[in-house]
Length: 262
Image (cartoon, rainbow, N blue to C red):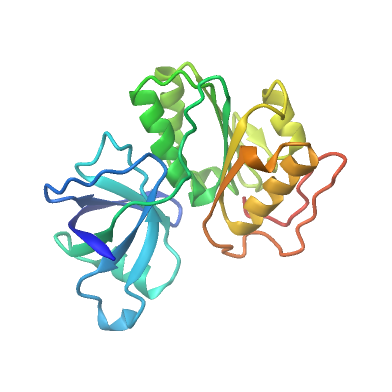
């Protein structure tokens, strides 16, 4: 059930087919933990949207940056997102209480490894921004996969974050073929790529966010590598046809063979 009335105050394109939206909390005590999500409901849905007048979005802001709060989303051609993109600044939305357990663990001796595909970066941005602001001592790794560089939201922000936070290692990768001048990794995130940066696959706690096919593939890679299910936390963002349903995982090399857009 919606609990807070918020006002749309800004929007911006942050990557190809990806936009960020900012909402004023209107002075409400909107408390949330980094990585959580909430339901956004249009108070006056347009006629084109019909019954499609709500969506669940991860809160991409740090809890320290609540005035305004930010969400980020791929702009698929749904009635709600079309209405959101066209809504006048000042439009009111009802927002539910934040919820979700995709949040950073408290044990500072355990490394946190974040694996993001596409807009799955939104809750991870919240977590890493908060960890950087609070100077948390956790050792942090971010593997961030997109098809092309133009699809990568917050890329420059994460580059700057590594300067502010010496505990953060940023490993972006692209899987397409149009990005030529790219100083980072290329190809799908797999066991080989993880092993080049991590001292061992067992030990860290993993946070995987992205399309359902990507989440399933990465979970499988970690499982066959001996990582306990208790050390894997996931957040799925819909399939978006980015991964084939027949995604296969090579149990020997850990290669993801899916025909992926990430």
